[in-house]
Picture 1 (tube, rainbow, N blue to C red):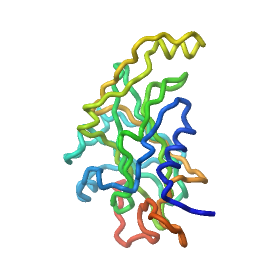
Picture 2 (picture 1 turned 60 degrees about the vertical axis):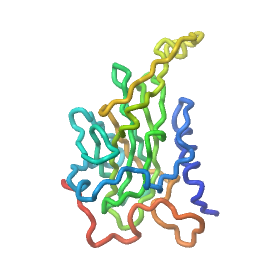
Picture 3 (picture 1 turned 90 degrees about the vertical axis):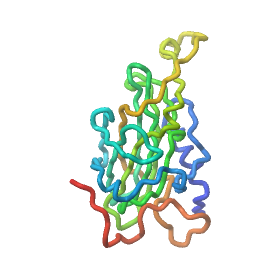
Picture 4 (picture 1 turned 135 degrees about the vertical axis):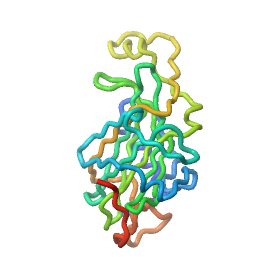
Length: 247
């Protein structure tokens, strides 16, 4: 079996589209392991954050206006959410959702994945999180599915969720409620404009953690593999000075 990691971004995009009902397209040219364009955050600053643990099969909801934290770092604006997830339970599927509010405004999320020493390993910009139409049990939202395989020897990996000054200058096109209703009842969809949702410095985000058996992104090396290096979150052996998040 050929293990070509040069197709990571395409596999990731395909996995996302297969898991959501609406037709929307993530950034298929995304190279998650390239964190050079992500905001540079000093390790000492990251260590001062309170990292909320999210266990397997758990969904954590964070209202950034009340429970978000602040990072005084260039390239990050508004409140951030900081999560830790278990890295010793196998391959992970992480679903990150940003829910629109009643005023049809929304938080445009970026996700920085860090290893157990808080070293950046992968970055998913806001273009990765695509608009999903509301359903019977769901609201307008931006959503993306991140699949990771943590390297052996780690206990935790970390996710920092934030937005940027550039994101606040953009908007998201949402479906007009009349159109959504017409689709739901099988009527002709009216030819009316869709609202433009402004992006806000805070909002409501949800992180769901689950395990999977066919991860799209390898986080750690495969012995005997060739091609470009895979996304690496940590080394194959646990460092002696691993960072431990506050309880």
